[in-house]
Image 1 (tube, one colour):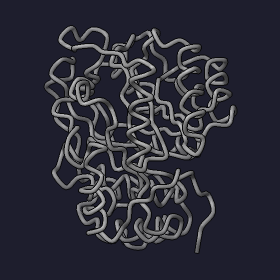
Image 2 (image 1 turned 180 degrees about the vertical axis):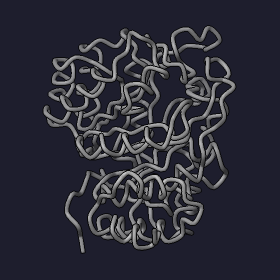
Image 3 (image 1 turned 120 degrees about the vertical axis):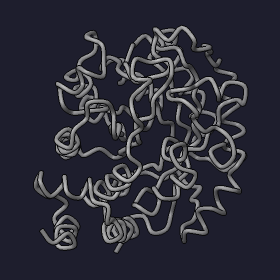
Length: 348
């Protein structure tokens, strides 16, 4: 197969057969793929890189996902919860720095009831009406999602992690269900959220067929945001001895996602920056257009350890925005300080 022809076809049609996708996922010759992805993202978003202020407000979680450092059975985790005042202080600092989207992310912590979360969201929206609020707090009921939306939440991030039922069962306890996770995603869309999903790259037992299945599921969902990152092990999990995910495969998939979902908001994740010093910049060159610096209080940043050695300082931190701006500018892009809502219409 002519690889460039396959990439051109994906660029033109936004789709490819499974065998072609597998070749592109695993290619070592990614230059043309990245160039096509960069061209496509410029058609929709120009040179803008959108910033989101990430507030990791709780590392308690009721679940026991086998890959996650904040799983309930990790007794070595030092737990914390932020108060409403803590979170509003983070937003105040973030707004001063120029952030116009706040991402509230945490484990599935039932301490934060609908009432508590709705009050938090409405308080943020009241104080900063020109800002978007994104939630990433896992699986909840339809009624809960609707109440949070009505309180002012604009976006919701919920990675499906893997679209293969067999693979999902190897990564999660029996109490969790892929069917329920998918249902949550479609309910979020129905309610009116801008919805984000995504998956790990290189998670234990993952095959190329699994990754193709992930892409096919995303075609059904058509999410506004797609977040992927390499699997990174954590010492306090059953997967502590597994190999890290492949940086190259992750970058190839970012480019493929950009070609399949040209309108999508795709972050260059902290995991990419953790696996390689220039990983985040590589993500931008492969077609990513979002970055989420950490706005959490300094005292808790190192406690939100989904995986070992997670970055939380320097240009990964909100106060390192000037460094981030310089690094982005060196690539020919610029930091955008607007809300950065999804754009489903090509600008060109």
